[in-house]
Image 1: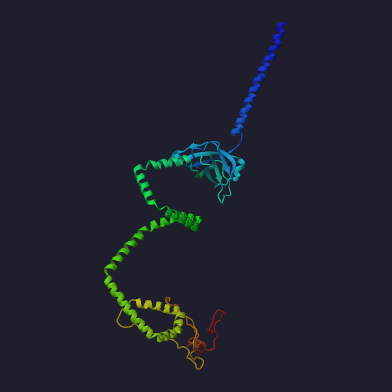
Image 2: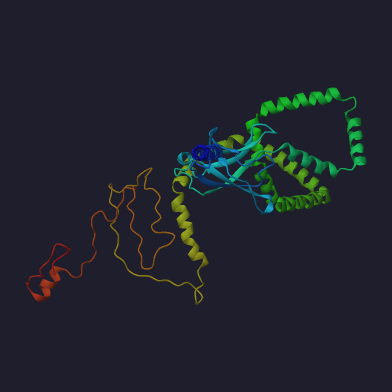
Length: 402
């Protein structure tokens, strides 16, 4: 009877052991799942890499990545690079990748001087139309200065200062400011008023363009020094020739006195002459193109090679006479307006004849269509060969038949 009871309890104890083991495994699985969910291991992310000159002491893994102030990811790790630089892989929410432009700016900033840092993605004023690509490398434009960096730089500066010289400098500064507090305060008030008048925007612009201006002065430095050197020589020459300069100035004063007397005595006559010259100068101004090209056309004559033999070479020929002037149709016209004509000058081509200009002078030698002597006339052919017909003509041919 006792044997049957012990056999009945053995299966019950084995089941309890298995149930306890399953409970422990389930609890461990829940904890592992909670830890994985807390770390974000079960969340799908896209990777971006940020390259910074430095990451800082308070940039830690799991730091926030923000876009427009909202968290869209976290820092996966911080990897040091040669030269003190740092590579910071980012785990970004895939849904937020489409909101990040390809030319996004990256800043590493913190809310306070001692606070933890975060990565801020700042879209530029003109964002690119395409979003960032998974695995794209971004460069950091600004990293917030930490208090330890300031202390480090301050210590490096103080380590180079000699206490004796610092004491001497502070003593000289105290002596210079002793009893001048009112003047120093007035100086600060005037400086504040001047800065308020100038405006911070103008001051920022001046500071921004100052390197360009200084570079321009640096490039022009040799020329400026040469000008200063030449000015020194000119000043030395003026000092050396000051007696001659005084004589010249006295002569100029005497000439000015004589000129004043001459102009004062002849002022009415000079005024009349200038007034009478106005029409002539106006006409000259109107026809100055023709005068210029005429003078330019004389340049080849003045610069041409001399004749091969002494004397003058003359080339003459006989031409038909122009139509004679007729009275009273061709009387000279007063105030004729023909306008300036260069007739091909100053460069008249080879075997080129200048065109005949019909000006507004009430005379035209070609008015009556004078053809001169016509040798190949129809009357001459009739006298030599008898009454014959001429060859057929076409509309493009002109003149007498034959």
